Image (spheres, rainbow, N blue to C red):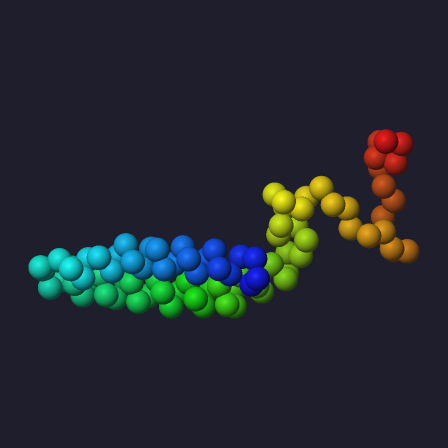
Length: 90
């Protein structure tokens, strides 16, 4: 949540604001749709940023941060598989 939650929440707020602009339209149907979609996106974004994203990153583990931390190797323990020969010689 510390890393990905604010990004998901900000994207949700921006998208909700975009649809919320429909509430300024003179047509009643567009006002209602803009309100409903904006509220739905805000609720979805905050539920996702508070519950879904942290749960998913906990399940995926270190691989969730692949673009920034993919080069780090996990600590080798007694039950770790042996490294390939090409990596061990390098």
